[in-house]
Length: 206
Ligand SMILES: CSC[C@@H](O)[C@@H](O)C(=O)COP(=O)(O)O
Ligand SMILES: [Zn+2]
Image 1: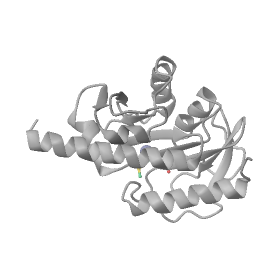
Image 2: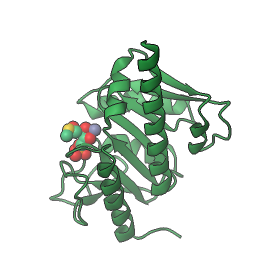
Image 3: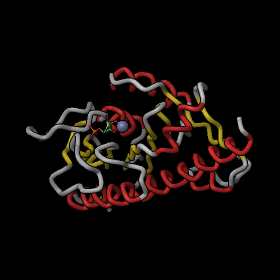
Image 4: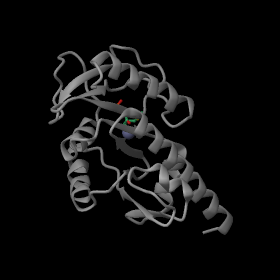
């Protein structure tokens, strides 16, 4: 059964409180969305404090990223959400966060991806059933031109149908799932892996 706009808005508000509380969405950073219908998304309004979202701090857009609610400014990164809803009809929620660990890890490497291997927690990602797997997370260079950034993300998505999320260097993480709880679970799994990776690298001093 699909959720109403009010229920989806409440899920976005609750996600913001949780993610802000964990320190993964500081200040006005981050943006969140849920699929409202096959061809519409419900997204956070730009510039809002994500720990203090209210019922009016979301708006509907089409999947080209156009606001369907005049007077409300959609997230600056709307296109990064709507491209995911276009890519996969089964995606129902998208979360973007700005954690310290995602920011530091993506700046530590000049590689264009990071692989996670042999972590039991990889099984928190959709489609992964064993630690004996590889989760490859692409890292795209940050770009204030979001259409240009989305155009770089798109070929990766097409070539990697199992992709569960990506990093933007020095910026943050995008991940998604069929429902908000799935996307939240993946954010937590990513944050665990980022922290393990940073601690391991610090101990190995590399
Ligand atoms: C506080 S700077 C963060 C922004 O530049 C952006 O990256 C971000 O995540 C939030 O943008 P928003 O337009 O509020 O959705
Ligand atoms: Zn951002």
